[in-house]
Image 1 (cartoon, rainbow, N blue to C red):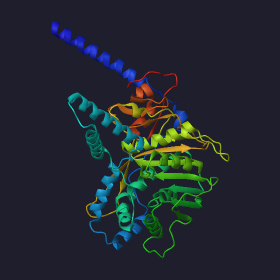
Image 2: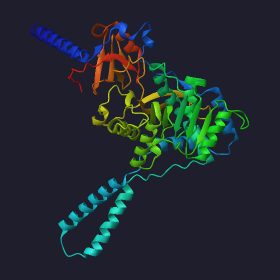
Image 3: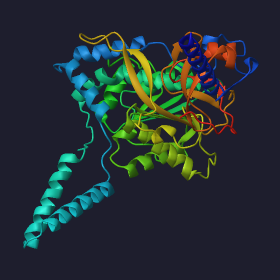
Image 4: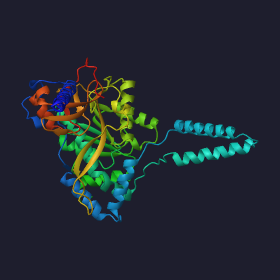
Length: 456
């Protein structure tokens, strides 16, 4: 009997502990009322949903790509495309000269200290030469050997097979958020920096169509510009382009006064040789931005860090030009302008998102793939319809369980929190919205500014 009483007490204590923990989890964030965010929309289409179903290339673009593939003489195209994909995914930034000098000095100092510990008579000149050789040898073994990508016609076709569909899916997923959250935005001009195959042109045209009157694609590779132009013309080089008013350039427009409603830089900052080049490019692109600047990179630690550097450059410098003094503000994905909390977590996991897509139909290629990417959207405009501005961003897949949903969200306070959403604690509408949401969406749960509690 005593054992049964003891067991009952232990069970009761566990239940109480679970209830207390559950309340703590649920009380971290505060839901908006139904009238504030749904506005008559079904829960599965609430304003925070920006995910798209599996994307496929526009028919004209896919046919043009297949025509180029059929006309090429590149052997082992699919295998080469797979190798290029892996290479680009693992690609890192070029090491800075300052970093290399610091590492060389540290290695040299360490070698000299080891030599002193051994003692004995030594030829200092000979020892200095040996240490220098050892330092250079160690640097060669441990330093990432970066080299610029030089796209000729053959490598351009391989890149098309490797990245056309995935790049299009990532850019379209990001532009979809602008389209949904700012429906009044109707761009007339587009600048695509590092345009490559012109995926930003196709993605933006799918949303705004003939509203876009001028689209300038800038890429220093003449071969890549030729392929992008061919993709616009369909199966025949002599055909009229499917999308008109597209202009290809190898350099950015010179005039600082020329601005574009939408500026896109997709997978391009990572191809610049130094931090100085990236900073100059970011500032130039911002000067040319009239409304939105969209930056997309691989969803790796490198890609995420490049975007956070760009974010810091623009927010901290607060650069204003004489003809446009409006300050930058973060539109997406961050619901705040504080330092990214993921950069301070160990192990370091990049802030990235995913989009399913259908690749080009080729032998040995799956019917469905996923593009993992990081992105940053900065706004120069006071856009209307900002009901999602301070919402929490889902930064991991949603775990749906019976009568509750586990969510990891980035809050407007600049903190990453794990939240258990229930109908009892957050209301039926917020709960159903959470069950209908996924990684990358926003939730109608606002982190109050005076809430200093943190579960992490």
